[in-house]
Length: 580
Image (cartoon, rainbow, N blue to C red):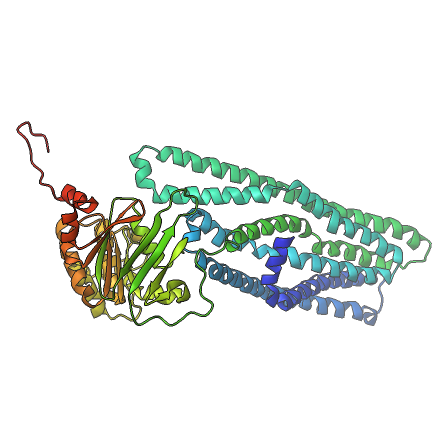
């Protein structure tokens, strides 16, 4: 109930539209009841061959309710669907706005297929919160009240009898259906999430699955999940058909009970038999409002579960909290790490411990070290993706946590070893860096990254995840985006890892030339062009082991010198043909 209360709080601005739709639904069913009652009265009265003017009231009622039913049904559908789509739009916007501060740190624990199911499937299920949870009980209650007055005008006994059947149809049957369906919605949601995740893994990992001969096993996994999902959905449909039949049975029981009460009254002359058919069709028509109610309990569970899955993410505390009153971005671009320590959630070992160094304005430094030394963590902390566990990071003497995070990332052009390209055109992917860039600027950026042949392919589709291009081409496209961004800080995190030696040399020459009046930090484990950097920082096990120029570190004969020697030693063959 707490989850439902929070969900209702989100859609509270639309409460009057929701009430209007419920009223229109009541008026629509009420018009249907009035139409049947008027028709029954005309038929019963006409059997006695009365004068025309005695049928005038019934004829007018038929015309009025017949036209009103169609018009009101249209208005009810228009208002209810418009309200539902507005609610879904608000929910999607609310969820995205809540989700954005969690990226990327807090979302790494979720699989992409599961997130997709929450963003699309779970929010779609919340449509039922209004359409099948809130509106039907309100409409049924108003119809029951209407029939109380209509039948009470003839006999209080009729009204009490019908009320008993309405209570069973509106309370007992829905709760019974909810009891039989308990856990079904949770099972379907879990199956759908698992199926979504397995499908994404199957499609995106098809090459690896084929390589290791696991394609059939993954396909069997998909079939098992689909079979389980169909089994639960079949159970849900069977219960739905059962409660529809039970509601119909209750309607027949109500009609029979009213007839049994009415028959002695007609025989004794205390009740006009002309109105017998009028009351019977009114009783039958009133159950139209009660038919959807058993589904309500199912959708209550479904909506509660969907809301719980959404709130599970939304209630997560962001790793980095945006400053309430961000300070202006500093003019002096010196970057300083002061006693920075950081441990990724779930890891016992710290990725960084007591890191202290400074990057002067327009200085060019390289951060090197073995794999797992903490190099990429430095870039993640600088970009504000994570917050240091201890210590501080500042730019121009201002802690980056006091800066506007969007401005910080706009001022920092970053190229990582994993380049993401959207399933859009090449032009759209490049315009992410500079939305107002001209074609000439795009072509210049491509030439800068060594992609001259792509200059005439700006409208070519990149494919899913940019898979139409090779890994090296995607990496160079990221470098082209870096050039377009024209930011004062440049961070390259293994940016040339997928390039061959010749292309890497050309790209690094362009990058170093481009970074002439900018601050540059290159994170790499490949020790090339090290003499071109003002300073080199050597990391090992999350600690700064050495710091200095290329010549100074070589003379120290420490970790850096060992790495340099290992990567640049000559490769020869001995007389037996073995490499040494």
